[in-house]
Image 1: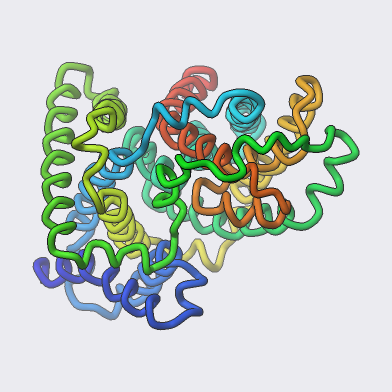
Image 2: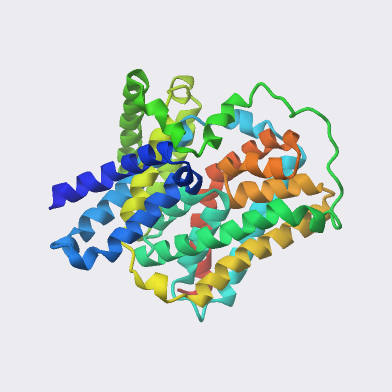
Length: 393
C-alpha cells in the first residue's frame, strides 16, 4: 500500500501534464491548480480507501522532501546578475511592493490576532506567497512547521482571491490608478532586449514547458542538477543541527535558498537545461500530495477571518504601494507590473503587460518577479518570527 501510494503521488502529476498537453481546457486551468484540485478530490475519497489513514506519515515526508529538492532546482537557471541590472523605477517600485506586503501582512496579524489562531504562521506564509510565489509559501510552511490544513486552506482561498486580483489589474486598475499616478513614458530601452531569453523559460506555465524533460540528453543533465540539489539539501540539514531545534527548519530552508542562489552564479550550473522544469515537477508532486492531506471541511465551512485576512493583504498592499509610488513619482504601468510581479509571480507578467498594452515593461517585470522570488523566503520567515515575537505567541 505504501509503495503504491508513493508511485501514485510521484507519477500522477506526469499524467496531468500529458492530459493538459492534449486538452486545451486543462492547460488553461494549469497543471499546478489541477494537481492541487486532484489532491483534494483524492482526500475526499480517503474514507473509502482501505489503509489510507496510515499514509499520513508518507505524505508529510514526501511533501517536505519534494519542496526541499525543488527550491535549488528552481533558482539554478536564474541569472541574478541580469535581474539586478534592471534598475531604476522598476526596482524602486518592486521594493515598494515588497514593503507594502510586509507592512499590511504584519498589521493584519495584529488586527486578526484574536480571531485567527497561529496568525503569525499565516502572516509568514502570506508574505512568501505575495512577494515571491507558491513555492515560497510552501517553503515557509516547512520552515515554520505550519499546520497542513491551514496551508491547504490558504492555498484554496488564494486561488480564488488571486484570480479576482488578476481580473481587476487587467481591467479596471489602470483607469483608476491613472488618476493618482503619472502616465508611463516610453524610452524604448526594454522593448526588445536580447537578454529576454534569460527569463523567458520562467514565464512558460503551460504543460508544453515540460516537453524538454522528454529529451534524453536534457533529462540526464537535469538529474545531475537533482543530485546537486540533494547535496545542497543534505548540507543545509547538517547546518540546521548546529542551532536549537525550534530554529532548525527555518535554518534549513534559508540555507537551501542561499546555497541554491550561490550555485546559480556558476555558469556550468546555470546553463544546465531542464532544471527549472524539473523543479516545477516536484512542485506538482508537492501540490498533489499536500492536497491529498486536506481536510474536506475547508470546502464546506468557510473561514471568514482567514478569507478576510488574505483579501486585506491583496487590497491593502495594492493601495499602500500606489500611495508610495505617488510619493516617488512612479508611473502607473510600472506600479501595476511590479505589484503583479509580487502577487502573481513570473508567468503572469506577459499577460498583464499585454492587458496594459505595454511590451516595454515585460523584461523589467520578469526581473522584478525574480528578485521577489529570491527574497520571498527570507522575508516570509522574518515576518513570521517577528509577528510571533510581537504577539507573544
